[in-house]
Length: 401
Image (cartoon, rainbow, N blue to C red; front, side, top):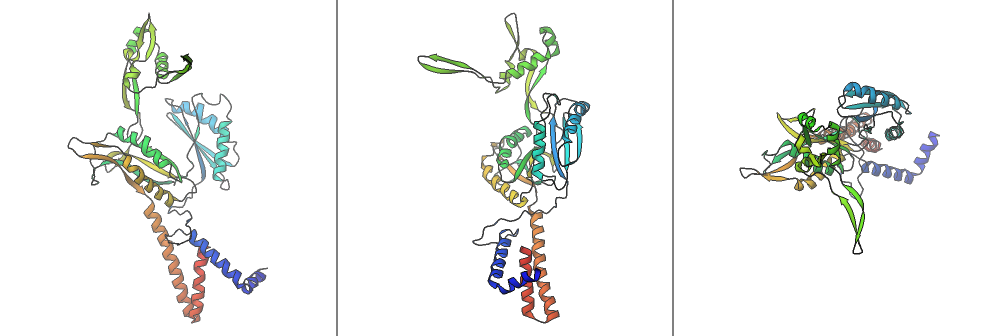
């Protein structure tokens, strides 16, 4: 059979030549090198400098704020782990219980397709029996990426027009810009699985209750919690008709500042409302955090771009850089006390581009050396320049294929 196939291509030189041209064109289109293919499109194969040798793993997170690790283990981690054991293709399940949240690592067999395993996990999470977990616990599936998907890190820093560091920004201001502007802009880039914020302070409304005031007004803490919850929402009613015009009746109650929350009514005693400011101190403060991002000894705010599984890391990084140039003019700026204009700037902190390009350059030089060495060896052994050129010309075709 093999001899017949070889004989067919030897007799039909036109077919052989056409197949060779097709293979060469296909190789040039999918080549990871920065070649100008002219009229040919460019669809390079995914190339990364770090091989992904990790296990086929998916992560499930479950938050239960304020609970101890033992409560998390008994009421969240253990029942959720036992429920996920029955998923097809699962090799092992590992879990970790910490203060306020649980992490479950599901290891699948190597032959299990990545996104098929994710769909099976989501199917299992949606079919959990009622009462298995506490009512306020909502388990969620982690991003569709691997541990090596962190391809780009950046920080947000105040810079002047010349690119010099100026400062002048509070950490909570930078974190708000990262969470509500930069993160959303970078999340839309093709191939990005997640943009994780790190560092800074997340602002929140904090209510410090006076226990003596609660005792004096005979108010339970649950009433205070319910008042805070009910004061931050809109309500809808029916409609009324005036002069043949129909009007929608709505109650607007979203909190916009501290004063709005302070005026929330907790209870009414003898027709006298007891407001939140009468029994507590309401302020804007930072959320409790467990880590910081340090750069050159200074605390900063930044983000981590995680590439999606199977995407081209180099293309993702290039798309991130293009999007950064697009959203940079919209970053906030302020004038400092000395008259310096400080604008928040996205500064790369870790970029895998150089490492990937060096890896591709090593491959390109290895192919060139392979062809050169083949020419020299054939000339020395056969003493035929035509034979050496013929053999060496086949090597790039095999590399393309």
